[in-house]
Amino acid sequence: DSGVTQTPKHLITATGQRVTLRCSPRSGDLSVYWYQQSLDQGLQFLIQYYNGEERAKGNILERFSAQQFPDLHSELNLSSLELGDSALYFCASSVAGGKGETQYFGPGTRLLVL
Amino acid sequence: AQSVTQPDIHITVSEGASLELRCNYSYGATPYLFWYVQSPGQGLQLLLKYFSGDTLVQGIKGFEAEFKRSQSSFNLRKPSVHWSDAAEYFCAVNNNNDMRFGAGTRLTVKP
Image 1 (cartoon, rainbow over the protein chains, first blue to last red):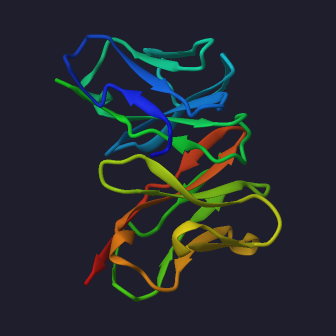
Image 2 (image 1 turned 30 degrees about the vertical axis):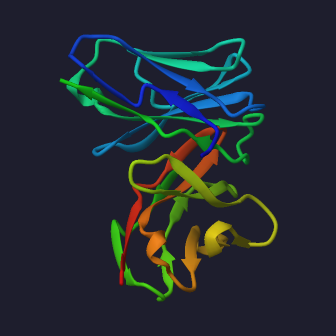
């Protein structure tokens, strides 16, 4: 158990809909990362937050957005969903967000868009 | 642009045999390099990392990796594989907090 929690574990929705994925980092970690894992794209970095502020952005679509709240939990919002958005979405956390730090991964949220 | 290549999609080894998983990176300076393992239905767990110092890095579960700048490689090794090592292994490089992962190598362990 990494100490990172993600809800829900599974999510099934329809094209065009909007969903919110939630992540609680390990106790004491200030930085949160979001990743997408799919069969065709592999594991891709989406976005990083540190203490409520966006720190780095990867291959995140404009239809996707994220935020980190004062209690340090984070949410990833996916809108206008397409079939290709079906994937496993991971959240990770680290102490201070440095690039040499260990990132601790949650168990993931499996999203299926029908 | 930085990238990570794992040339082997799938490797099968016998239990007790040695293992080497290959990883090549493309990046100008010395990058921050990582190996993660993903068991079925689970998140990723860090095995080891390198960003400076001794080029032979020891990790958890008996794994080690060697950074070779001349070959732009960071191969993962284990002298004797256990059945519980069956999983998917990812090499990753972090530059400016943009973590790039390789496509992964799936390890099957034969009894």
